[in-house]
Length: 171
Image (tube, rainbow, N blue to C red; front, side, top):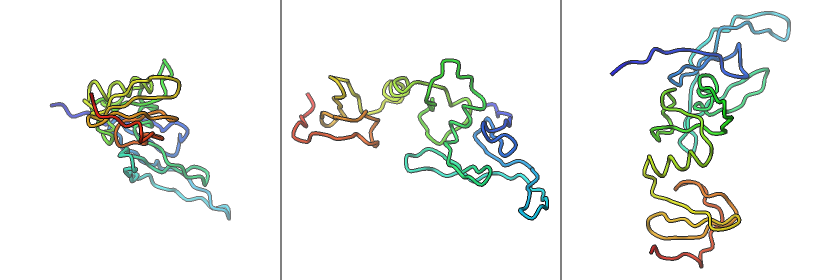
């Protein structure tokens, strides 16, 4: 078992304010802060507190020029360390653990690649099949149902509107 050496890089769009490591840690950097009355103060860098959001992903609040915004840590790690030549929009956790934001656990993916990985590699209990324009047929192992009007996400996420009178038993 090898222990990874922690490497730090600037957080994209927050250069000079925050750094992120290949292990998923975030810290602020030492910087000079101007007071409104004209004085300067050295603000020492420190590790930043991370929180799990309601979906199980780790996020962090970063501030710059008086504006604070929440960011997903796995996306910050991927943007800093992973090359995205194919311009894929999502970051996939290879082992399926949403709070494991180490670089070796992350990869850029499309929405369909991310979903397919969930079903094939992580043995998600749901499967879905597109059956028409904006209609999906889902099976969660207990029942089949039509989900209409929204993209269907893995179990525990918003499934959109479901026509309850069309719920059928699994065949």
